[in-house]
Image (cartoon, rainbow, N blue to C red; front, side, top):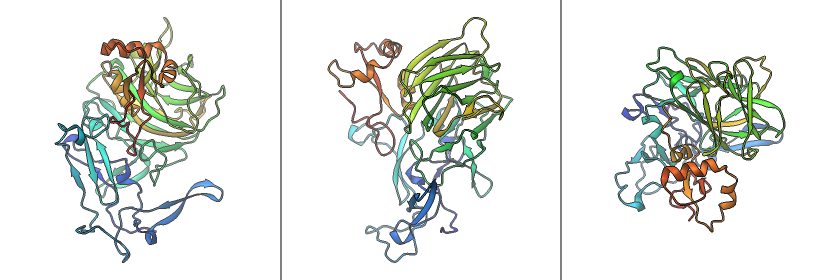
Length: 410
């Protein structure tokens, strides 16, 4: 089905990644198979177990030679191993500025696709984990391990080398399931284990952490608890159906509160948690907007303590846990330290949106009213805006997955 050519994916490596080779998660790496882009070279692949359905047509991989029907534009070399990029040296001109909420972003082309690559997460020294659900590469030949998730975090923390997929499932071979690029489908018995090394230069328990991820649930909106995240101290975050979040201590003490609205089924939602030292306070963000601000009751057990050890996504560490694991897609798992000064726009950017202040006659006001006042008050106080309503706006996401900053509401 595919060639033995070793050039399959596009990665970045250099000073901005602290010497780490980072596999890019977008249409530059739309498939890990080296199939051609002309019709005679494309293949139908059975990717999903869905009876007679589940077939996907795959093409435009890293092999585009050997077919006499191949047509190229005049002057094209035909060598797809040339990777072209335009550094954004023209940002002073608004018409030439990339329209995404990132500061360090380049347009890159590899002959089969052109896409935006943002370097911000890799240049930020505060990341402990930055996983976009692509496979980890290892060894002198940089071979992909589809049971391991790449961690592209660099900086001041000793970060996990990768996330290990435990139980059923592996990294997608074709970028179809993610909020951008690839995603990872988890069953109730599967999850991702990140082992946070010891010997840290900082006391992790005393930092303020932001933990965020996209979830596309395939579960009922019922009364069952399902483990979404479990921390090294044994405490965790459960979803109750699709309507509530539960913070659980290692001893099983629960603190459950409702979200502003149920998570959308079979669609991506972003959940973010800002965790203060020893879990004394947890701020919960839904699609980039603050919807709950929980303070630990006096005498309650600590929760969500970050420390060296195993951090789990999608299930509990113990297979005999009384709660099931998460069932559905996950993507863009980020863990950021020293997040006490992370502002509302940055948190919204993690949800691939941008904060907007709404005019009094805006048709989006009904949506904004469903968000608790604490979100609007926080943005208003931080910006000295006179607006009453705000939104983390992401409705105009473009084909790159980002909100279009040139197409925001009034």
